[in-house]
Amino acid sequence: MSEYNFRTDLASERRDIYKQANKIEGQIDGIESEKEEINDKIKLERVKIINEKGMKAIGKPIGTYITIDTKDLKIAREEEIDETAKVLTKELKNLINAHIQKQDEILIVGLGNIYVTPDSLGPKVINEIDVTRHLIKYMPQYIDSETREVSAISPGVLGTTGIETVEILKGIVDNVKPKLVIVIDALASRSIERINSTVQISDTGIVPGAGVGNTRNEISKNTLGIPVISLGIPTVVETAVLVSDCLDLFIGKLQDEAKSNEFLNNLKEMDNYEGIKEALVPKDYNLIVTPKEIDDLIENMKDVIARRYKFCNKLIKRD
Image (cartoon, rainbow, N blue to C red; front, side):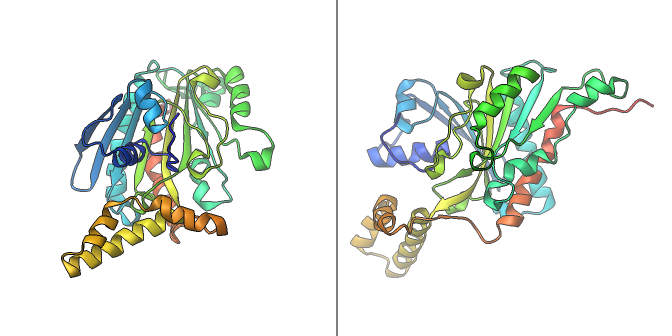
């Protein structure tokens, strides 16, 4: 995999870091990218890693990575949350339809620790999902014949269960036999602007904890034997990221006031993350940080995801 210490789960950020480090202007060999502007607040980008060169460059498996960015989602109104959810639904449906048939069974997995707010996204979404597997089995007379079978689980974390998440999921997949797994998790980003404003969808599975240096066993087709779609939202950044971004903002302010300064211009163009990290790590100051409004932000993003999982099934009571 890649030699770079990206410390971000987002494929688009990894690509940009690689391009900056290698002074690449166009596309990276083995990676295709396309952007789409949905409206003045929502932008979408698809990053496709098509071969081993692309995979080795940014340290992500071959596959499709879709990033949905919503400006100011942390203070979004109901209609803006709903619009983002609609975009997410469309992209998620396309990925699902590319891997399974219309009525094939789906298992939805909410990763994370519900008692740690920045890591509680997955379990909170699970609590909002309409599951149908038990209804189809025990009350079929109340269910439309085209209803998709959906089950859901929040397996907890290794520190609580003592069991790797992928081991738990292997047992479930072997017994429940879904055709596809959707994994929901909180991610790490290299930009403070992306915190709770970005959704990444991928058809390559997920490596829990990779973005914060606490890597667990991967959850993917390789380990479960069926397709795995991951859906993640950045909720944390490293202190080094926060300081680097703030430094860029400060330098930009000085540049605007001074108009010209060669030292500041050069400093602004550099990626200061590694230098700042080297100063912080020896004293254990490179903390993982999250916004003070994280409780409200998690609720917003939970709504974006959960309300759109209604597409998985159609519950219709018989008259």
